[in-house]
Image (cartoon, rainbow, N blue to C red; front, top):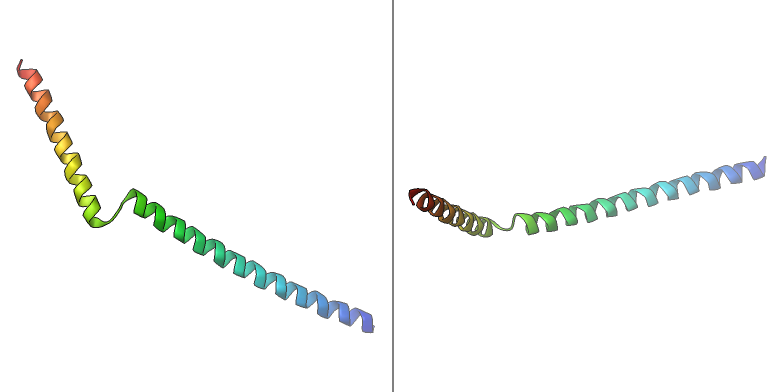
Amino acid sequence: MGRNSVGVEANGELRILLVVTVIIGLLLMLSLLMCYACVLKRLCCGTPRERKCLLKERLTEIWRVAKYMISQQKK
């Protein structure tokens, strides 16, 4: 009976260690995913100033194409 209780205690400690390890691993993975999300957001969207500049460039390009198409229709 003494050996069985020691085995149960060791098994319980092992489970606690396993749960703690899994929780720490999940927290690390979650923080890594959050970092990836921030980096991708920065690469794709940029800062508000960069977005404004990019939008201005796109609108300028659209305006150029529209003017070109209108001039081609008049000919």
